[in-house]
Length: 346
Ligand SMILES: Cc1ncc(COP(=O)(O)O)c(C=O)c1O
Image 1 (cartoon, helix red, strand yellow):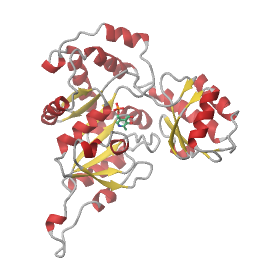
Image 2: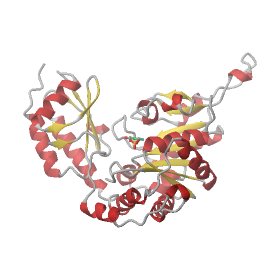
Image 3: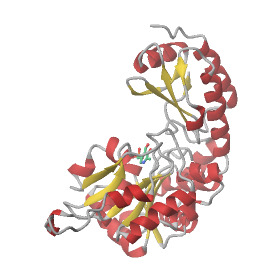
Image 4: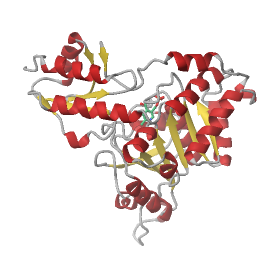
């Protein structure tokens, strides 16, 4: 079976498991775990931030960020198809009690004009208490829902500058910032420099089994420790999993270029198949989005799985295929052959 459902499906390699087995550990809730401390310091260093906090998941890192930046009843400007809205258990409403001020993105990206348009302007006919300004702008890079699309630094910088001008903070959901860095040649810290906080994941393209981090100013990360505790994210001898994340951080970033090349190879192969519509221009990192033209996404995924290739249906006629370190070039060549041989007719 060739598994192209997600870059979260990879298994730790023997070397990573070895690093995890040898990890020095302690009670991290009491501040005693040296491996977690090392990971947090290294993440802060790579991202150019004062501090970082290790969390069990990207969802928790994002949800903690919302709590740090906003109070119940606040607005934040966010692209409509963002992960924080789509697949985090509706925690924006249920836990943070904040409201999205939606921007319709273009491949997940938006511009300073979209931020400015979300800010109510005073007018004599509108009471000022009706004009509630958003307090935060949320950027996702790479953008999962749009198919791993990348914000170039210049575009992100313009949006961040507009946010600041309007008095808003900026959070970057950088679950796949490592992919954005490799795709653009821009170091992660340069993206992070325009943002107050950034969340990152080790369990996606980097191949670690567990964990994410939130990085930002020391004071914000101190506050984040309280919210992590409130959400049940305090872990004890977490050095065992943090060692996997550290290993991933040091060894698996540069190789993401292979995943991007494999995604391109896959996209080019699939685009030639009758019964599949695929816009090659949307393939910017390790995610390929395709549309069966004659059958539904779920029928396409079922037929492909029966033949040996697993993918995820994203919508009625949208399917996602993702490359990662457990998927080789040979797997991709084979996946193209298998999909080309499928009956894609209604
Ligand atoms: C952009 C983005 N942010 C956050 C997350 C959440 O990460 P986790 O699955 O670790 O909660 C994901 C997961 O796929 C993601 O794609």
